[in-house]
Length: 275
Image (tube, rainbow, N blue to C red):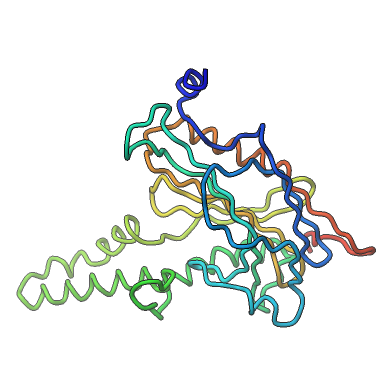
């Protein structure tokens, strides 16, 4: 019967909403509650941090880690793998839906309670990281200055070719740089926008590299003027021609978001709303 079900829906795996867990996290006076299907991926998830006293002096800086263009405190990660209805060796894995919860901190010049400021900031921070004049070292540099590195390499190659009498690459350098970033780099993202979920206004934006099938939907909720919660769903697409599981993953994402609640435990305190 399971095989028939898998063949009918076009995939096996993914979030199973008949087997769910309830998670709660305390971020100072804010309580974040989720209902999630259990992961079907064996992973080495670090110990769950249930109490997050983010306003304690120095706490964020002590526990935050660089994660590509984000400097954040990891809260929780969950993942659900989608497989072909019939196992077919290395091509059995269709993709994975990842959920990552994290705590982020904006610069003092940004008031995250102002949703438009936060929306502008998350997009500008993305651009600034990958287009940085400072280029991270080879290896685990989290992409710092990645676009700049690609442009510098193409310019150097074009100049060397010109010294040999071939000036064509210099003539089309601008277009070559644009195409290189579109294919292998980090283009500017579409503007972030404010959306409502369960009565709260979140800043939403999508991370997508060029026309890659893999993408991330990111939801940001201000906790005060400096800190904000990020909820990131990454749709890692291994076989882009398979569409059924991708539709299921998008629907599962929305179902998970619908279970999310943020409440305030302390009296006379309200979750940050637009200013």
